[in-house]
Amino acid sequence: MDLALLCVFLPLVTVVWGQYGDYYYGPYNYGDNDEWVNVYRQGFNFQCPHGQVIVAVRSVFSKKEGSDRLWNYACMPAAQSLGEPTECWWEEINRAGTEWYQTCSNNGLVAGFQSQYFPSVLDREWQFYCCRYSRRCPYSCWDRQWKFIVCRMTEYDCPFQNA
Image (cartoon, rainbow, N blue to C red; front, side, top):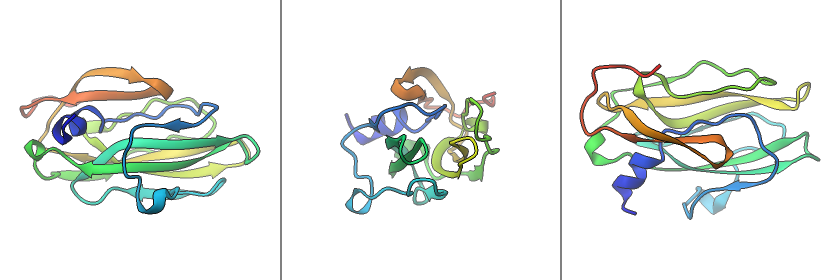
C-alpha cells in the first residue's frame, strides 16, 4: 500500500472506551526505540510533527496498573494532495468514566492526543488534536477492531462540515 493511500485510509481515528487486552496496528515506526508516550496512571500529550497525522496506534492494557494502558502512536506526512494544514486545534475534552464517541470537527484529521488518568474511576479523559487540510472531507468510513473508525478523504474541497 503506498503512502498516499495509507494517509487517506488511517488518519481519521476515533477512540472509544477501553478494551481488555493489547492493541497493535501495523509495522510502523512508533518513535525512538518504540518507547511508550506515557507511563501507567500518568497524563501525556502527544502531537505529530507539523504536516503529519496519526496513522497507527499501539496500546497495552494492565489491570494491575489501575486498569490503565500504555500508549504509542505512529505519524506520517499527510498525502501531498492534501497540502499543508490550514488550521489545527484541540477538540473538547471527553470526560473519564463515560462512554464517548469522538471525531475531529470541521473535517479535521487526528494529529495528536492528550490524556489524563483518573484513579477514582480507573479511566482516562481524552482530548484530540486535529488539523484541517484544504477542507477535505471524510467519506466511506468503517469500524475497525477496538472501535477505531477509519475514513477515506475526498479529492476535492467539500462545501460542508461533518457533525
